[in-house]
Image 1 (spheres, rainbow, N blue to C red):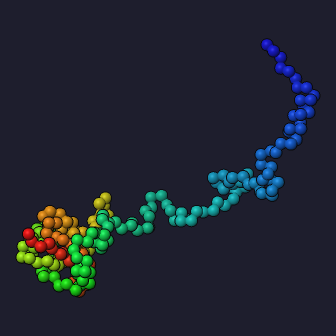
Image 2 (image 1 turned 135 degrees about the vertical axis):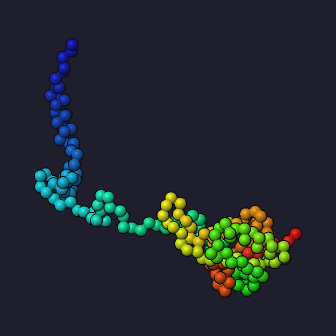
Image 3 (image 1 turned 90 degrees about the horizontal axis):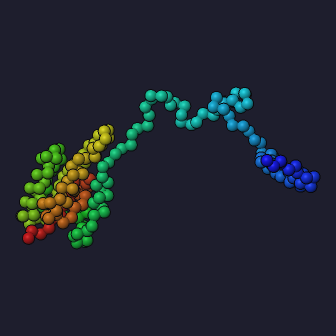
Length: 204
């Protein structure tokens, strides 16, 4: 087994120079005047001295088992009706559509679905639209009502105004989509948010 070699005097002198020129970790912070403080312990003590731990905002009234006082956000299953109608493509004459939205055109017939259940409203709407087209009518008014706010609880919240949500969907589905050319919200003089203008195609 080989014996460890002892450093020479020149090697010891060289090591001493390196050690004197080295910059220990943390010296720069101490030399710049920054004060190093030890991290407080969980109970607020620093090196045995008790220090008050600042309380986080908003957590003072939090207790285990207590429910939040913040109201639950409202839910809606689909975008608002006005937004859906605004984003739909234009299928009818633009000038006539502008007059329609301003309430300048008078509906030739109307149906009031307000207060009906979905089971009654859907077939009643189907009969009315197909009958109106068969009689050559072009503009009809469908009154849905503004509806009451739906229940916001449960895994599937109900939308605001059941018929206001479903009637445009029914009009876009067979067999009514073959009869409907354009749908838009009614002018305030014809019911406003609680009614729809339905512009029909010419019967073939």
